[in-house]
Length: 597
Image (cartoon, rainbow, N blue to C red; front, top):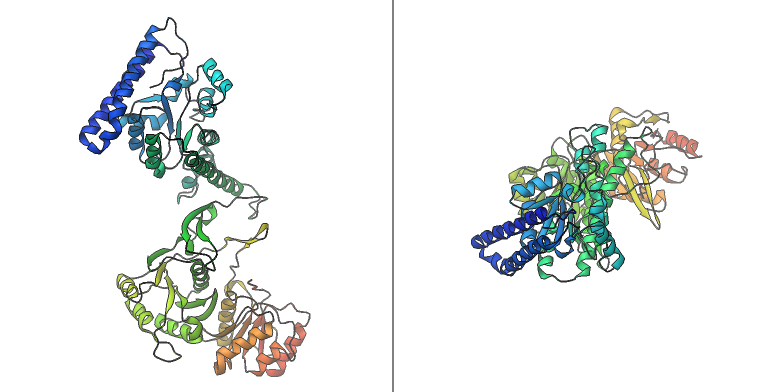
C-alpha cells in the first residue's frame, strides 16, 4: 500500500499491515484454488519482504517527508458499472498493486475484502460540491500524466510528494442509460449525470498510455490481468486500450452533445455539427462483392433508441447475415411496416417485386410470389403479422407458379413475431435460411447517406396515403375501389428505385418497373410483368411524367389502365390531363414526389 503524502510513520505502518493482510487473503484463495498457486507463490514473499522493508525505512526516518509510491505498483479504480469489480480488485492486490479508489467503488472493494486507500487520503481534500469534485487534483492527475522517462517530470512529483499510478480503471456515469430510459428524466437530472472527473481520468491515462494502463471495459479485465502477470512491455496492447478509452469518451460525449441539442429552444433536427456513435456488431464475410471488406455497426445515437429496424432484429436461425442481406432485409422490412392490413412483401436487390395485402396472410403470400416468381426466388420475404404454423408450412412447401414444381427458395424471412411451431417448421426448411424477428421501424428518423468527402442528411420519407390528398385532375372521377388501388400503388412505389412505376389492383402489386434512366422504359417493364391484369388497374409513378402524348401517359391509357396517380408539377401537366380525358382515364395528382436513388 502506498504511503500518504504526509508519509507519517503511523500511516506507513497501517499501509504495510494492509499489504500483509492482503497477502494473507491471497494465500487463503490459493488453498481453495490450486490453479492460482503458480501466480501467487512468488508474489507472496516479494510483497511481504517489501512491506517489512517499507516499515523499517519509514521508522528510520528522522522526520516526516513525502514518500513516493513509485516503489509500489499502484492502481486507481473508479467505477459506475461495478461488474467484476471484486474479481479485479482481488487480482490486482494479489499481483502486488496498491488500490486507490473513490466513494462507492472504495466501499464495494472493502466489502469484498480488498484493502483500499481512498482518494481523499491522497489529496488531503474531501469530496465537495455533491461529488462533482473528487479526483480533479494534482496529486491524482500528476501521478497519471507524469512521463517516467522525463527526469524533470519525476523530480516534480518528488518535489510535491506525488506518487505514480500504473493502472487506471474507470467507467462513466450512466448518462446514456438515464436519458434513454422509459422514465423521462428531468433536465436537471440529466445535467447531474454528465461525468466530468471520469472522462478526465480516462483521457489523462490514455494520453500517457506508455506508462499507464487504462481500462474502461470490464470484459478487458482478464486480458489486462494476464498482461500484468507477464510483466512485458507490449506497447501495441497499451495502444489498443488507449484507443478504446478515447473512443469510450468520444461516444459518451456524443450522447451528451446529442441530448443537449435536443434541449435547445429551436429543437431543429439538423444541428450545425453532430457525431454518430457506431459500435461494431459483426465483421461480415465481405461487402457487396467478395473483394470488398465489410462490417456491420449498430447506431448508438439517442434518437434511435427503441426505434426498431433490422439493426436490432433477432436472428433465430440460418447463416450469418451478409452485407447485401442487411440491405435487402432493411428494404423489405421498411416496406412491409408501412401497411396496416396483413401484408407480405418480397424484395430482390432492395426493390419490392411482390406486395399483397389480405386478411388471409397465406393468400397475401401467394399473391406476392405470383407478382414476379422469377425475381422472388432467392429473395427476402417479409410479413407484418405473426408467422404461425400454417404460414410457415406454406413458406416451406409453396411451389413456384412458373412450373408448379420448384419449391420457392429464400435468403431471409423477417416478421415481427413467430409462434414456437412456426419457428420450428421454418428451421426445417433450410439450414441456411435466415429467420429474423424485428420490431417495426419508427417514423421520423434522420436518414444519412455518404458521398465522397461528406454526408447527406434528410428526414426519412414517412408519408403515407393518409397524409396526402389525391386531387382529381381529370373529368372522370375514380370509383372508391379505384381510389383505394391508387393509394396502394402509391404506397408501393415509394419503396421502388427511381424511375419507378407500380401497377396494382385489389391490394396486390401486379407489376413494377424500377431503376430505369427514363420513365417510359420503367412503365413498359411494369406492364410486361402485369400482363392482361393491368386492364382497369391503378398505376402510380414516383415523379411526374414529363411527356404525355406518344409517351408514358398515352401508352398507359392505350393499355387500359383505369387510374393514374402521380405528383404533378410538369410544365406539360395539361397534356397529361387532356390525354387522360381523351381515353376516359382518371388522373390524380398527389403533389408529393417519391424519388428513391
